[in-house]
Length: 106
Image: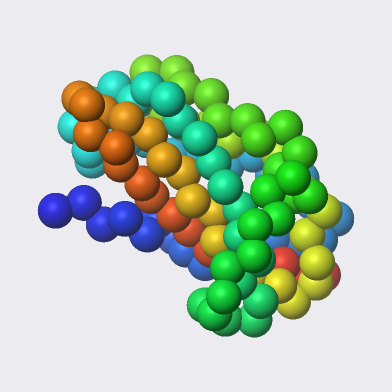
C-alpha cells in the first residue's frame, strides 16, 4: 500500500522563499497523466481547509516528466500557517492523490 502523505511532511518553508516541490510517482507503479494541485490553509493545525491556491501557487502549475511531478513555485506564505498541498494525478485509469504539509516560518 502506498503512503499518501509524503514521508518528509511537514516541510519548513520561509515566508520569503519560493520553492518548487517535486515527487516521483514510482510507488504508484506507473507514468502519471493529468496532474493538478490545490493548496489549502489549514491554520495552525489540521482543521478546516481554506483553498488558497490562487494566492500561494498563482500559476497552479503541475508538470510531468516521466514519473516525476513538479509543482510551480509555492510562495506568499503567511508566518505560522500550515498549508496542505494536495496533488492529484492519473495512473492506469485510476485517480490517485498525495499530499504534504508546509509550515510557514521566518
